[in-house]
Image (cartoon, rainbow, N blue to C red; front, side, top):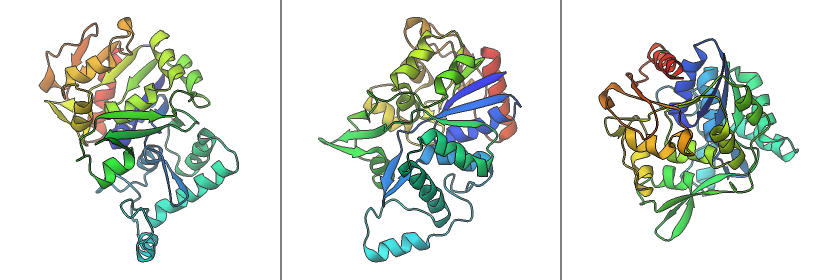
Length: 307
């Protein structure tokens, strides 16, 4: 079986560990809306979170970044008063960004760079950025626009978001290999990632979304909301900007039924949300807490059954 997963963030990385445990052929199409250039380096937080998590190099306590990280360069930058001071680059993590930036500068597309980085980490799934083109999530708040990373990391999403803009999405094309992966898949899973800033930027790539909407491969989404609260992160604040209820039904309706121009053929919710209705979409209930890999694998198997 060939499985394609749309994913982003820590939740997406943990979900992919469960998908990998099926032993099937897995391709992850990963959000790049979080990507940003700082101190002259191109940083891809979601791609790196997936790569480090599946490659065994992630810091499990923090939930992001490298295990055994040190912060000498960050301290030296602070001593120089170099901005931005709100975004910390660890010494180990810095090496990844240096290699990526050098390869991008030499003309390699992000998909090829990601493949080269994964040659070291051996994540056990194929990682593809949603696009090789520039696509960044910006947040409009208080009459000004901030890069998503500044709103998320510096301000902890405390500035009320009025809307999210996916800069570059209009011109972005699916990265090399993405459309082929979707066409060859037996099932597409939408990970329980933040629907607004992890999944929506992927779907903002027009040809990618069209391939899902017009395709025949079943698409099953897994709710990132349990009992009216995000599993982790600040999805509630992101959904509020879209006037979407922070509920399993709200996110399901946001993705929409494929029969009505959305992407879903089935929607998996937690047992706490059993009875949830999403227009035009069959809904199944199953415990969705990803407490360990076995629990996550059980979620994945239920999603495959729904397909």
